[in-house]
Length: 284
Image (cartoon, rainbow, N blue to C red; front, side, top):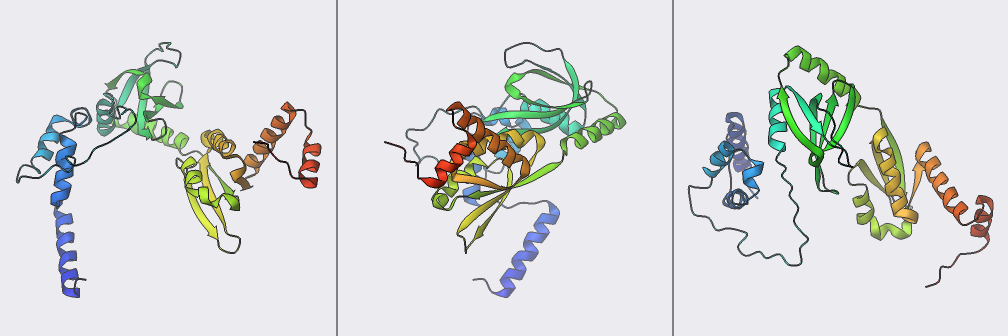
């Protein structure tokens, strides 16, 4: 361990570098940077001047490529995570300007160009696709569009006052009321906690563990538009979890169970009596 004088010196040095905007890179970090710049996707993800500036950090000395000794076997088909529209959309967002966007529907129908304000770019790790969250100025609504459905995006010159007014309206719509719910993991499925947390990975959450009951509880936070997605995840997990707090989710899950029983001609009261009197066994 470093002595107190070394710690003080390191802290002063890092503080001074942070104030001057200078960042230090280790040889391993420079090696990873060199490997990243040599990837074909770097030409699409970064601007030429950015690539040239980063290459200056790796030209000082010879470094071994860390990827030379790595080999991937039985990997899935690599998808393109860099979309050509990322750069122009980011440029519009940096310039704080409006845009004219033309999209097509899922069925391929071409929509008319619409004026709007880009709000946020988001990448879905589940679907491996980029989404643009934007405010439609003509309909005064919030839209979430896949980049693969966008045909063209052009910057439209707007005054700073107009941009601020539109952005204020967009933020009020994006900052919708958030709901909270508590999902409890059934104790016999504690070993599948990683899988269960992965199902809720796209939501704001907090996990707490009760040592006496040996149960995990997941506190979820979500918006109105995400409520249906939460229900989909709960149905997917099935008997591994149950909702202990959240009136709306409880109601919807009871409706799901009732409709599922009705498909097999079982009434809710009959199913409850059967569950209490005997244990149902599934053959196989």
